[in-house]
View 1 (cartoon, helix red, strand yellow):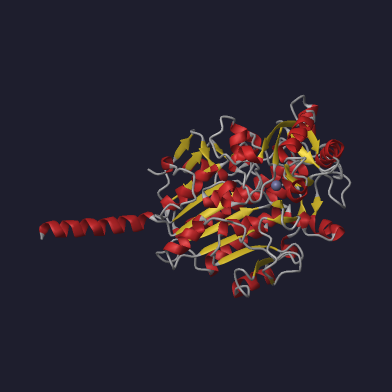
View 2 (tube, rainbow, N blue to C red):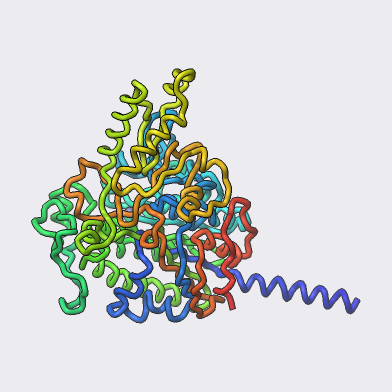
Length: 543
Ligand SMILES: [Zn+2]
């Protein structure tokens, strides 16, 4: 009897203890295109209450890297929230060439759904191409009362974190300047979001963007030859009259790349917490936020621009405001928050070249023309189906119709030979090589394997030299602005900060993979590990 009661007491103690350990609300923040060094490069202008609060009072994982190629937004968000790589979750890029339809499909594009209160172009999206479950899916499965809300300016930034069964996944409509969803999720927007859209839309947040601080506070110069000049501007300099630029370009793109979009998204997050009653009951809820504007601005101006410096100084204050609200609502220990990025970015390659570093451009259509020409010359026929994300797709039907005289290996050998002489191409890998599924000694080859899906990827995959970007010959001013996608550390090394109840104050130097975040989230939420996960739980963030 005595033994039984001790056991019962232990069980009760265990239950109480584990209930205590689950936070009431878990907040995931992804900053699109945030490089690790932004934590330090802009630090002198950060407040004590934003990034620095997370860095100094939580767990700071200083060596967090993406572990696959290509490092784009879709794969990034999917990998963070599934704890696995594109070869398992299937989001191999933002868009890819679909062999069967010969169409370039979007990772969240879905013609089988309708936009809800959206304009024509922006609502047809869902997670139907995400092949595995997310942490948010598992939370919904385990706790029927748990709620998942996911928001972003970009559709993929909201859809992939929110998973297959969210209570609300909302993204920005570039036509209307409001937040929308699709019929995959619901048939109408909740009343609170309708009200929010009425009062808090792009038009009511757009303003003239001037630097927040005095001139001497910035380390970047405003006018540089490496920045894009926006339509309606004559130089890449402040001030940016956002409402006017939107009018000139008949697009809300200037708003989406401005710090005002970050403010709008923060307000949406706070409204979602209030009106969806997140964190109010014992079942843990999850709110996923992805700030897209730093990426949209980063592509145009590059990481060394005054615009990016100012965006982060302002984002720090949004973060401060958001953390303070969380602490007021849930208490210092009532929530857990993590912040990371979906990829980094390469400095503008032309700037690298001008400064004497490795870098440059690969003009992809020029390269493809060269391959098509030599293919015709050698075999009398062009066997290329298309190209996307440095994946070359071959036309299987055409090759099969020549089965007696030509095989795939001959074609690939010819292309490899040609590519060896093209500036910027570092190495290539064949589908047959990547299908082997072995552990590769070559780090970049291993990353390519982790990003490879046999159903969706091409037949010959290219890796570029460090500092190189693929470009279209048609792109205007290719030497202005920049991008990402490689397996080099400028694209893979991102911030990873954890803060809140039960998170230890700690600096962790050991190298970690982005796929370690998913299993760690499950552990903190006391949920079982997902079969598809490849990451390892990060133990050092707990006391
Ligand atoms: Zn991007």
